[in-house]
Image (cartoon, rainbow, N blue to C red; front, top):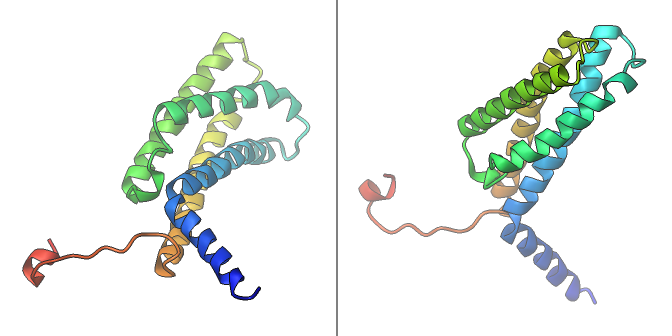
Length: 167
């Protein structure tokens, strides 16, 4: 029985190694939606010092969540996310936050949402970008640790002399 346990562990490692791109994208999507909703709560707390007005902002929050799903999937934000550089990640998140902010402001204008505090909405998107930067920095560090422990990643053999190998 003890001899079979390492096999199961190795299968799990192989599954994670083989499907890391998908796993990383799902984890990123989960954290992004969580932080999107948390950013509204934080901005309401900063503006009003309580959450009494949270019910009032649920319509805007539902719209932002739906638009986030459509925009992020439409823009390909989660496609091959695990191997993008930090600069490319920042660019895609800046673009996504700006589009979300513009669409949210347009939505609030269309539904005649003059009673919504613009400060809460702008603060929400600023906090959202900061939280996303932090969370994806932590996910990148997790990926580096897993790569260092050889749980994810693939072995590569490079042929050539020193001059050609490092180019």
